[in-house]
Image 1 (cartoon, rainbow, N blue to C red):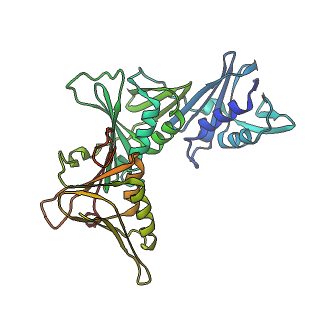
Image 2 (cartoon, one colour):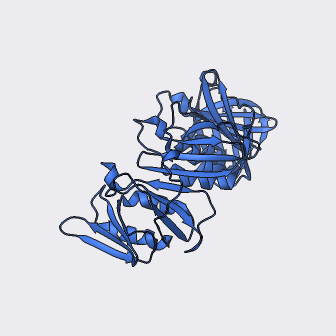
Image 3 (cartoon, rainbow, N blue to C red):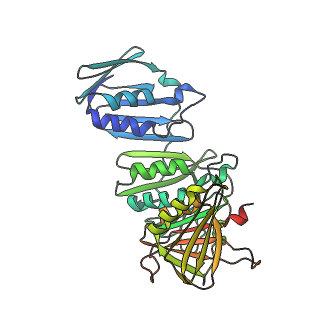
Length: 383
């Protein structure tokens, strides 16, 4: 195999191919990147039996062929090559990489032992890339990072006739967003088609394909293996779906809320960050909402306490809730609006506050137009 390729194009392609590979793998061969050179150009692929990445790029191919090489090492080399065309050639079990005055020799891995890249099924639908990336960033923050319960480490995609819903939870908060969906094969009135995708994989898809115009999504089931594929700009990512039943968290959202407060999002973020400085780890901040505004209080150690007041417009009764500051900041950072509405839900026990609902607010008087909702349990309910 022998080819020449643009340095920046090659470096970006290798980086994409290795991005979703695990840092450590029990089978060293799964840490490789498969490079297939044909008269049409190059195809770079990676696959660890759970997630695959594949991209096509242009190259001047003198001798077609296929080679498997350590992915992360090649990515590091490609990212540091001088600004000149990259020449790659193979001879027996060795691969030579030369660029300008720099040259490297790498050992290849046995191509015949590498698993076959998953085949993509028929397209299920199209989603606007930029909107999808924004929705993933808003929702994935609420997914659990605890592998003990794999089913909540994912983001559930819910395909309906003309919409795609994204839902995530870690038991203490729930994030939901709806976006437009084109070409879904779900008829009106049918139940949604669901796909539970690992949150980390979905976040990388959003970052990588977020500027691609439209993303083609395909959900397929083959040989007891359910997978989802995202394709755009000659790049494709596939992922096995997480097996299990995602908890029915949508029913936790209230139909209507009469008691809520509206405030400037940036003011609330900055005040929370300041007052939380004196808190010990895992401690909660006390938020007191009254007709006079919002007061934040932190009782840290004996050496430090803090409080701050900011403007807030309250509708309904005075309310006091204790919230974990980082969980609140995650929701506020995902709102993407100048103002934010914090609504207070009720429980059967009048002395025990229900979850708070965070939504966007276009102005002090007008609710936001997007469909993002973030439900957060008060600290009292975490025990």
